[in-house]
Image (cartoon, rainbow over all chains, first blue to last red; front, top):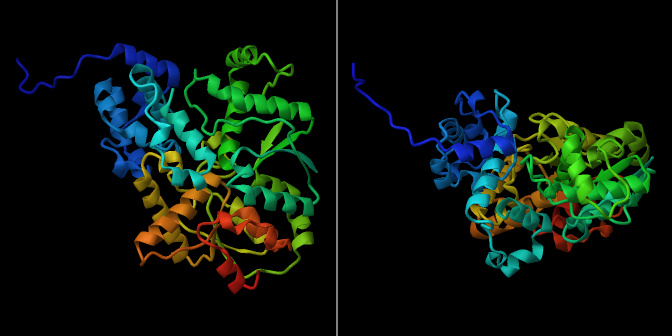
Length: 138
Length: 292
């Protein structure tokens, strides 16, 4: 019998799946979508796609959807999601892996130092600058 | 007790008050603190990617210098530096093959660092090690009538394997405030992220966090917020001022490094602080409490 409903998934993204596993070692299939990561993340409201949905996209190997989202660039690496995950998944590490893959693929630098206003630099601690470059420049 | 000391870049500039007051405080507690003769920027954020080894070289280089300095403990005050150094060390300890790659890359160093030789220690753990009795000896029984909201931030508590205390419900900071005769205020946002380096990309996120953290501390009756991280300090202090300039209904609270208040409690003159480095001036509250 022909199925009445069909779900069409995009082609599997083998290269990125492999690269992701290689640099993070995170088992995305441990995730059961409880949403604790998204609930505890302080930045969820600024993300187009919340962290637990990124985990779902990772399970479905839908990297094109993740590239479109700003999630991994909004993440401040505070590691709250990892601390709260009942399945012990290092979600913060997954975000780092995604940042690295996307930097490798397209833009080696997402950040231009000349965008920073001079006035901000007067009081800004150096650790903010260096930390930001480390996350946004390969 | 003797420790080596790694300041990191910010404690030599905008975070000067943290360094100056801590060194004075530790001197009073009879700790022999010696700054490493040579040290490097730690890299601020630890790369969580398994193969991004180049970002782990700088912290290991610093640990080589600490090993050569010969002392068993390395005091790291800045929370970001603590996190990066501690995780880099754990990484090379757990991954001997990657450690070899890093060693091969560092051709200027004659010493090799394997992961166990020097213990990296933060200020709170050091104070705990010094012990309540010694602190009591210096501070005495007097209490300062200051309600202090201790803000941990993220980098001393997460991830779990390098945490100085419980990830979600720590008490070490409050315990130390208590030991120094200050009254700790527990508030729900004490372990929340301040937004960190996103101040440069997404300042709305940091503003939202600062508003939540600051309001929560004030609602719980705090006179001061104390922190152990220069970036948390900036985000809570400078951003708080920016919010206050736009929103007249917004109440402010002075932010200080924990050592600034602990040193006052230990009888060290507040004059050693450079209060120009604060955006919200703590002096009015200090005067009101009779401490300045």
